[in-house]
Length: 54
Image (tube, rainbow, N blue to C red):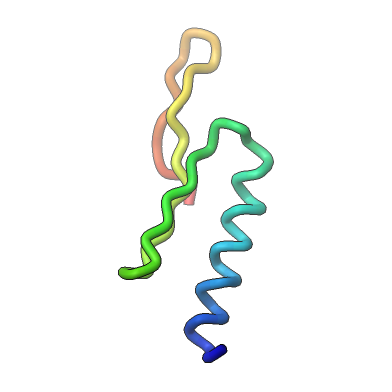
């Protein structure tokens, strides 16, 4: 496994761990273009929560 693949794996594991604390967090991975996103799109009481967390 070369360094780039290792960094990709570490990044995915970190984001999965980060998102595991919020059940409504959505993970979006584009491994071809090395783009990773943790996104929130939910309602809390009468407030809409949406946007990029990381």
